[in-house]
Structure formats: C-alpha cells, structure tokens
Image (tube, rainbow, N blue to C red; front, side):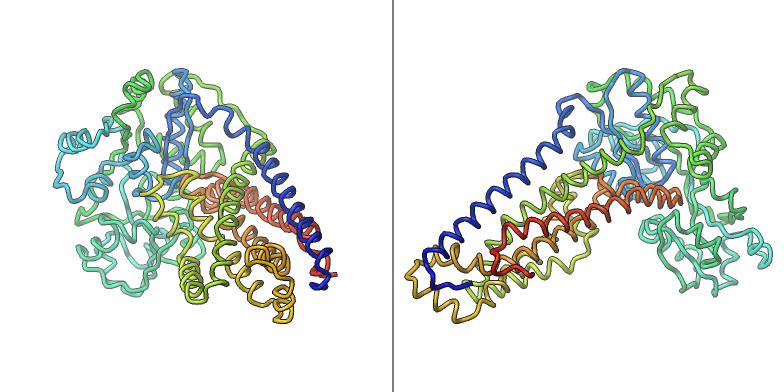
Length: 517
C-alpha cells in the first residue's frame, strides 16, 4: 500500500470506513432481530422464583412454579443461582420474589450476628426486612458427615469425635461448607479435629471423590439421594454441633399483594413434605434422571391433589433459547467493549504517560478471576443479565485496547512521515491513515475478545443470566455428561462460527494491502 498516492489512498480509506459502517449496522440488525423473542413477554406480570445450586432446592423451587401455574400466575425460575449469599441478596434486592431455605442456615449463617434464638425471633426480624417466612415444610435437611460404610467399619468410625483418632484422613468438603459460619472452621474448633489434608470441592463432585477413593470423608445433606446410592455411613453428631435445618420458603412481603393465591397455595406445603418423601424426590431427579419440574408436579398431584401439566421442551427448542440468551450476553458486552476499548487504545497511543495507566488498569482487571467479578457486581447490579454483561465487558477490554495500541504504535516511521507530508490534520491522519493501517491488529483483538467472551459467558448462569452455562451447571449437579455437552458443544460451535464470521468480515473491513494472503 503506497501512502503517497494521496487521492486514491484517501478514497480507499473512505470506502473502508463506509464498508465498516455498513457491516456494523448489518451485525447489529441481525442481533436485534434474533433477540426479539426474548422481549416478547417482557411486560407480563411474573413471579420470580430462585433456587440454590443443589437438586433439592431446584425441586422445591419448581414446586412454587407449579403452584403459580395452578393459580394462573406467570412465573419464572432462576435455577442454581449459587451460594446462599447470592440468593439472599437477590431476594433483598427484589431480583427474585421467593426461594427455599433452611432455618439452620438463617440462624447460623445468613443472620448469625442478629442474636436470634427462636422461630418467632426469626420471623419478627425478617418482617422488619420486608421478608416473610412460611412454617417448616416438614423435613429436616441438616448437615452430616459421610464416608463409605466399608471404610468406616474397617476403621471403627461411628461418631464425628472418632475422627480425632485418624488425623491422616483426607477430607473433601463442599466449597460453601468450607467457608460458612456453621461449617468446617467452627466445627473443627468444637470437635478439636487435627486434620490438615482438607480441600474444597463442588458438592456434587464430593460423592465422586468418595467413590473413586480420592477422599475419605465429606459433608452431606441428610436428605441427599447419594447417601443410600453410595452406601455411606453417616457419622453421629455426638456433640450436637449441627442445629435443625427445617426447610421453609422465604418470600418478599409484597408477594402477598402481587400473588395472593400463590401465597395461599404455598401454605399447603407446610408440614406436608416428610424426610423420606424429600429423599425419594431427590432420588428421582439425581439417580433416575427425571426432570425436577416433573418430580415437583408428581408430588403435588399425589400429595395435594394439585394437577399441573409439565410441558416438555424439545432439545432443539432448549438450544434455540440458550443460544439467544448466550448471544445476548456476548453481543451486548462485546459491542460496548469495542465502543470503549478502541478509543482507550487510541488515547494510550497518543499520550504515553496516560497510556501506561490505561494499560495497567485494564491489565489488572484481567487478572481478577471472572467468578469474583460476577460476585462483585451483584451488590451493584443484582443478578441476571446486567452483572454478567458488565463482567464480560470488563474482560473484553484488554485484547482490544492492547491490540489497538500496538497496531498504532507499530506503524513504520516512514509511513508516518508520508502521512504528515500529505498535510492532513491529526484527526484526518488518525481516521484516514493510522486506523486503516492498524485495522488488522485491532480486528485481531476484537476477534480474541469475542472468543474469550463466549467461553466466559457460561459463568453467567451462576447468577441467573442463562446461556450455555445453564446445562453445564445442571449436568455437573446431576453428574450427567450428556447434559454438560448440551452446553459445552454449542459454546464451542458458536466460538468457531464467530471466528469464521470475523474472518469473512476482515476481508471487507481490513484494507486489501494489509490482508494476509
């Protein structure tokens, strides 16, 4: 490409800018048209149900959804939202209206510093926070310690206190139990346990760890189906450390006015779910691979004579919906990143001292774990799309800023001198000469950001943003590789498709003289 042929060069530059504008508009229109179904029912009154990331919580959440349908109320279920703190904050903010929880968790974890002793104390404190609580549903799902029965019998371990005689045991606890106020740190102090080989795992993976002899002991929920399935011995809590974890529902006070018939129906569950019935429902979902919605509907029909038809969606419909959700997260965050990152890259090139600050801050953001950024966003933006998009936007900045800066910085000095010889003002020089010359590097940064964005967006499911991460989370929870692949394979295919589309667009956007043959 020869800079000195001024007229042709400037015309080519304008043509490239026009092509870029047209391409951008076409991409944006495609995204808007594709996402229109997501907003079709945006104005419909909806009760937002939440659940934590374990099977029992999802089943109880589905019961609320089925009861809402029975009372002709539109409801949506934000499943598997993560740890207790995430769901609790979502309830306080109004991002969800109701979710299942446990009295022990409220006393020992969520409101541990409130000095609450009785259920009446708890109800009164929650009411001050505009939160209502149902009566206990009828079963106690307490924490317990479990190990293989054959291993326990071999070492004569029956009580938690017996662990003191076996400091060499390998302990693997769920991540939440490792950090909770009613979890491992305090229990270790109460029982004076000497163990040092302790690791944190996903709760559903701890059972696989026991089965494969990677660990010797784990925490369980007393209604987990895996206890019987893996033939585990539950150690006696001989110091009575764990309280009762009676299942209840927490809901916002305004739900009484928003959906009075649902609240009335909700009370029918109080005292009506036994421990054996909950274990059986967990077994149906986790071991027999029956959907949680069907498990919940079957229980309501058999126990309360409430009949709701569960509509089974085809795999293709699920993939279509997940793809739209994933594209929404990726496209909005990437478009915002491009709009901000390119000007930042130009500023870093133009002003060297400011440039080091910009590159340093953007680089620092990239070092923060993506899950941490998602959690940091919750107090500011709640759960759902907004915090996920904000986190993805931040993660998309570095490749674009860095490549914009590098592409401009690496323009050959003789080309810079030729551009100055044309007598162009700095603005025209930037847009007619420098940016076209740096376009291949800038485009490579955008392409890299897009690929990273698609992969990172799967974490959005942890805060209710949906997308391909949802089946991945569900598959991990249910130990079902088929469900995991329903999210993993489309994410990989989408990444390859986006890379292919960017390579086609590059032939239009990047000046021909700079394209790699």
